Image (cartoon, rainbow, N blue to C red):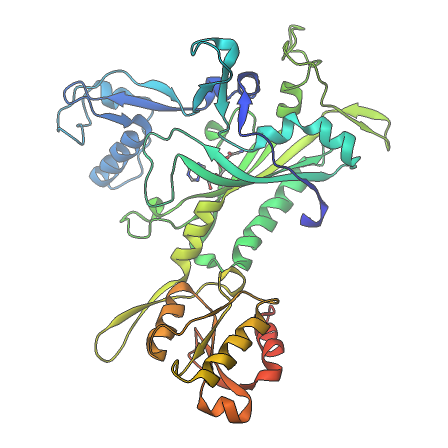
Length: 430
Ligand code: GAP
């Protein structure tokens, strides 16, 4: 399916307020906040609700459903900071970063803009440009990787939740009626992609969002969750979102178009001057395509890769060292070329020449800043799959030792065969 991606886009980060008004973000992109009246600490009310639910579950030894904010109003939850139970009412807090453009007054609503909280809207508002320039036929996708910004109330857990993060999103446009099948195909393909880059199936699961959790635009959303919090006691709380795959229907293209009307005949978007519909040459019909959106966080993907790859090895002396068992395709350095003796110019020269010869086909580094044990340990720690050692014997037999990070096996390979040998070991299934 990924072969059908038509375009890659790099759209603006600062977008006109109207984009976010009609996308629904101004009204609904919020977290519920509550303040402690005693110590003025501020919390996300939904997080307190989850803690309260856990407490009740432990008390009743059963699953507990907590509805609404009554538990705060009744003082059944104490402030984690001061221990009192005197809360303000819960109010929505919009997560978008607001600023203004041009030399206008700060409070001029005409000048208000937002930093994008998702890359997706940049794709929708450029839909007509993409159609006019690429002339693609449905189904096709438009993908974008870039920074998004959210004024998160509780950033943290290393890079799990930050206020500035990298998203990779695709809007895959299909004919209405073909959306459900395409949605399921993307769910399966995305899960497989995470497995292909080395994430263990034991640490991945699919989460079908219940109706009450669905975003205003979604017909169905399935999250791919990763076991980000294995240290938590309750198994259910190990998991959190790595990626969301939503069926956004035709919501976005309609809401940014000038023509569509609501049930009372009122234009959905009286500010729009464009029509983002699609004319199907096959059926001679004009309609708004449906959209399947696989949306993943780059930072969370990196975190999941690091967590899955992290391993420790303790030697006979009780010393522990880290081995980062990254999937070969994900390792930033593919091979390190190491001279056994850095004071021997012939060995150093040969090692540097080998590194230069490998560089055009894979990321290779040269390092001579320590003894061989230390050099191996350093490469293991950053996840380099192979180390190539040049020793005294190499000067005579034109061969080197190739050491495997994971098995620690060492193999003697002729320098003339080295690049082919390494390429074979990097190929899938080897
Ligand atoms: N366009 C749909 C959308 O933005 P989302 O579930 O809000 O959906 C997609 O975000 C992905 O972006 C999430 O699955 C997560 O990996 C990542 N993400 C969201 N907020 C994040 C944050 N504050 N820090 C790091 N990654 C975040």
